[in-house]
Length: 367
Ligand SMILES: NC(=O)c1ccc[n+]([C@@H]2O[C@H](COP(=O)([O-])OP(=O)(O)OC[C@H]3O[C@@H](n4cnc5c(N)ncnc54)[C@H](O)[C@@H]3O)[C@@H](O)[C@H]2O)c1
Ligand SMILES: [Zn+2]
Image (tube, rainbow, N blue to C red; front, side, top):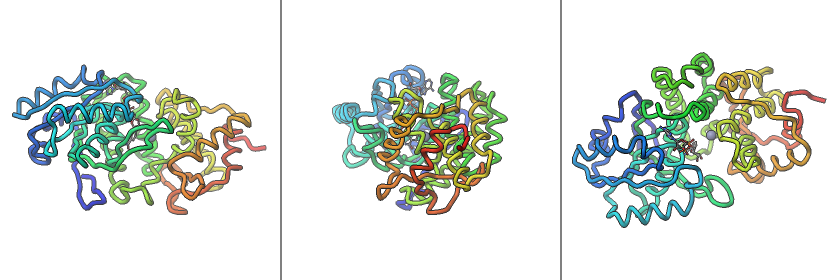
């Protein structure tokens, strides 16, 4: 159960086969007769049939809407098209949207639900590991603008979340590894034994074995839900979920978004751990341990030493980040694996000189 700042809460059901409980959960938590399942075209082809059959079998009126797969669909254009389409399809205030898919679908459909007639219920059924481990819980929804990712959005908590790892069986291993980087992040900021468990299970997790996947998703959702429940609006402790993301987002942007998010965050975590080591906040050798864990998942954590111009561009990206407050870039630092540093309200301003040093010598050499 995830608490929301409005004093409400929503359940998150996790387990192999929980998809079957969708009609019952709708009955309990939503009571709309008119439903719209929205999925990208790939996920629709793989999984929408089963969901539609479940819902039609339980006497719902249900329509299916699809959109092209990929981040490019998290756009004003797709938001507008879907909004028009559900209106045309007779959706009203008493309807409910079902977001079936990865993080793109959850964010986009969540935002359509948040804004349609000032807000209608949404149910999240994540199908990618990114969405199961991270994006389906927490209530953040939104779309990208030409000026940057996730720049228009709303907090719109779902009525409930159903996480059935069997849906992820069709996910390619590289996509799996991407989502697992956020799980490593949860371990790195909150739970050392979880971090170690993920490393031990790395191969099985990449192979898509159900038991370790359920275990990891449960632990990640528990950890994230606890943090979000304390601070839904990211005024305090929720910021620790941004570990690795200040530099990660900058690397992603600098690559023209060719670098996948998980890989960018993995490298960001290593760099931000080095930054912490430099500042005497993070225990020595922590960055190397994170790098080794990232390698366990087949992702290359190394960042080549950057030249003057690249460093400047990265710094400029960090200055444009949403996490900037009062004109200063803030970083979440960890004290060691499993312990985020609470100092300065869970994130702190770090001088650009220090960041520059880490980017110029990302292997940790100091001159
Ligand atoms: N709201 C939040 O708190 C939050 C947190 C993290 C990430 N996000 C957002 O999530 C997005 C990334 O999520 P993502 O990586 O899931 O992207 P995605 O939704 O584009 O999914 C990645 C790819 O996997 C495919 N896919 C999904 N499930 C599948 C399955 N079961 N079988 C086969 N293929 C499947 C999709 O069609 C897509 O091609 C980004 O837009 C990011 O901003 C949001
Ligand atoms: Zn992330």
